[in-house]
Length: 122
Length: 107
Figure (cartoon, one colour):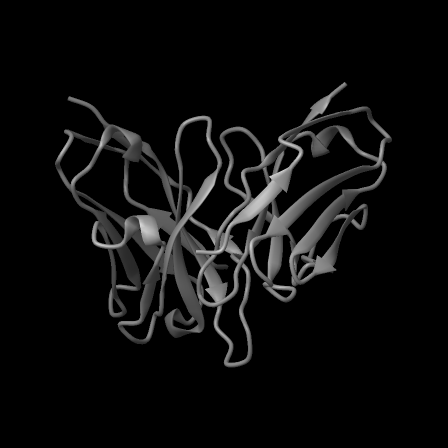
């Protein structure tokens, strides 16, 4: 079955960077796009960006452009999401999620990782 | 970025009630809208996609409707396990804005 296993909790200082990983299994890696979503404590879901599994194509939410980079290693079946210049309001649970790729249309987020808590504190 | 405005933010209901949650997009997103349920400490769960298609394994008391900019999630005969927070999401143009969420609480 499809599984997404994310890296463990992180504690960072303001201004630092964090890189979260999402190791996938149970499906053909090229069949699903990868999206990152975050959720601040007690807050709603926030879409951060999307990445293709077969190319360098990515699309970031406007507020994250320039500060977030999404990458992947197809050989390792792992996606990565790095946030630089961390601020206190970046403290959140970061999720990776998959949507099935089709040539005709878009698909919803069907599988989710367990989430990676990131704390930002001086 | 496309904005999704969800209402109400909180909804009080009783077991057996029918409830509706609304979502409005800032521009047309066709029917590229999904609805998720999230319980405290849990990962979001897909309920509805393409505005009205029920995800496999989801009870038929959940239903979705809408096209263009206005969308609705309806839960018929509310059950104890349905008390949770619900989010709409548009997923067009390789973007994916979420609504602010609606918490369904026991009256």
